Length: 103
Image 1 (spheres, rainbow, N blue to C red):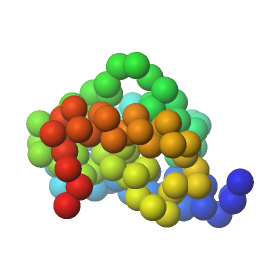
Image 2 (image 1 turned 180 degrees about the horizontal axis):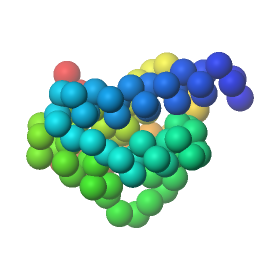
Image 3 (image 1 turned 90 degrees about the vertical axis):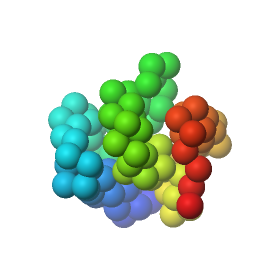
Image 4 (image 1 turned 30 degrees about the vertical axis):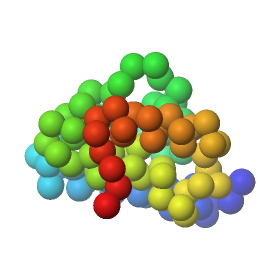
């Protein structure tokens, strides 16, 4: 796998953490710790594999800022090589469950 792409994704995951903190007044500390410990790609895959919705997704939904979620991030075309169709489908379903549609 492309190490540079994985590093860019890792940086993007940290970026949405910072944006959520500034723009939605939400500090997703467990998310930040998981990304720091596993790396962005592995953290995203672990969160997607979880059968329970993250507290982060719920909070961002209440703040009407799902655009700052990991689920929206992984659906960006540039990250497609990092995730399976099944993982991307999970992200789409979660977002749909919250009524999110990409603009």
